[in-house]
Image (cartoon, rainbow, N blue to C red; front, side, top):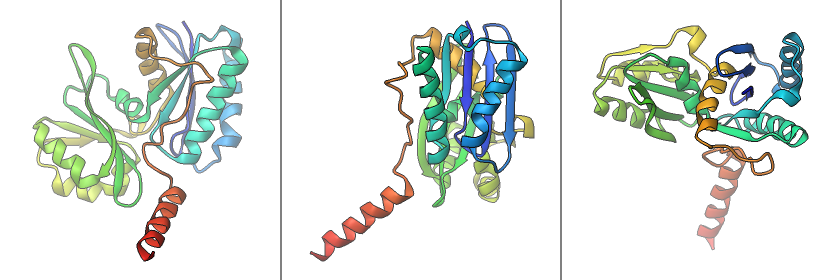
Length: 239
């Protein structure tokens, strides 16, 4: 089984190819570049480097959300286009699970934090146990204070990772009451390699869709949609 993984839910652009036993290739860039200009060339490069015919791929994994609206649209469009062209299924992996998968072997709570602006984060709580990867609290958009309250209530050691750490580090340090740490640089952000690993488990469980069925999961309305709803509510209130 070979999986092509596509990650563009945030500033990180990443592509990887993995089989059951080996991460065959991974190309990751964390820089202010436009994913629409970089993602396909990255895929082309890793395919060329390992001499892979894309028809050999069994499924395409994509970080399905939450995340940057533009980034998710680009990643989903890329995965969907490839899936339709190659007639391959799409494995939709929640972005927070992809980030948490970086911390395999950590025995406490894993708390990915993605900066969602407006003092909110995209987050969830996960851990690895004897039964494997466990979703303690599913992905959500919430205030940073609220997820830290859940972390404290869990009463276990926790590791924080994701771009939300940089945005809310002072708050994390101030409010976290359990032993905590921050993931090292090479594990702190989205990686297509981790996406491919998580996707392989979901694929084995039959959790995939056709390319035609795939849609990104934004988890909340875009800023433009929120502003429109606020404007409509304000106008309705004046009537």
